[in-house]
Image: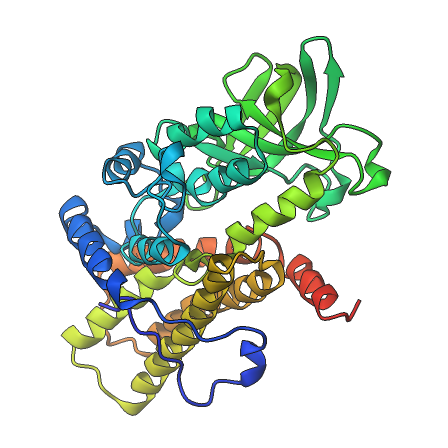
Amino acid sequence: MLRPGCNAVTPGTPLSMLTALEFTQVPADEQSFRAEIRAFLNEALPDYPFHLRARSWMGSDAGFSRALARKGWLGLTIPVQYGGSGKGFLSRFVLSEELLAAGAPVASHWIADRQSAPLILRFGTDAQRHFYIPRICRAEAFFCIGMSEPNSGSDLASIRTRAERNARGWSLNGSKIWTTNAQHCQYMIALVRTSGEALDRQKGLSQVIIDLGLPGVTVRPIVDMAGDAHFSEVFFDNVQLADDALIGAEGQGWEQVNAELAFERSGPERIYSSIALLDCWILALRAQQVEDPETCATLGALVGEMAVLRALSLAVTQKLVDGHSPAIEASVVKDYGTDFEQRLVRRIGEWLGAHPDFVVSSDMLRTLGYLEQMDVTFSLRGGTREILRGIIARGLGLR
């Protein structure tokens, strides 16, 4: 089975792909942590089938999330005073990498742990930090993100959902769509308009915390072609929010949400969405002793490219360690990573089609079938290619 841990970049890697990113190594003292995580996963997920592993960070299991919390592995980088473990970003990279490589069902806590808690820590009031963050670290509070809206496509600045001040705080009306895991969450952090109109673009946008159990909130899951419901529509009809629902400063939502997206786009989940299929194929190749040069070249190219991606993702993590907000670098890794994840599915599918005598297990067929249906979403979630390449172009001064 292909497991993370190699930091090497294959010879011949185009230097243009590594511009502005320095090579980063996982510290040696993290290896004992990696071994501890693997031992836990081997016990928690024995004989976990590949078609379930392919769900990866889209698979929800609140009980599994609570088991991680009991180990102190949620809020790993959060200060101890707020219920976290106070570890560094590289420790979190190791944990995320092992969870994703094992295909662990982490969706319940993933967004809250990855970006909601750091966002509240950075921009929230002290009362918000003490109320929400410890609950996130105990897997008692799961969060979703309210960004995309109907009829807006990827144009996030054109949102119309509005929060208006009143005597009791804020009155919220509007809707969000493609909201990951909303049906299993207690809270949403939403980007909403608190002043101006949609034509004002980034001006007048703010972020608010919404208790999804409030009157006037309706969550409708969206069932996909695979029969899963990873996304939901969420509607707000005169939802009354308390005055302290606002995160950060009113009107600063655009700047805050861009800082939040750096957390979303920089993680190793942009590498490992298809790894269950790669692992399954490698095991089958070994079992059937397939060693012809063409197959070895195909496998080597995929593994080599994954090594490059991992090095890039680690370098972005180092930027976070150094206190930077690597929005541009994270966009590069996300765009490149999702393209690789989609190509991996196509390459293995094409190889199987060209080798009809190869024995394919039912688990492998289900894994391939699921990923062929779902991999189109890889380049949509977290920002489309067009949006990411616009960010990169602006960062390079090209537009």
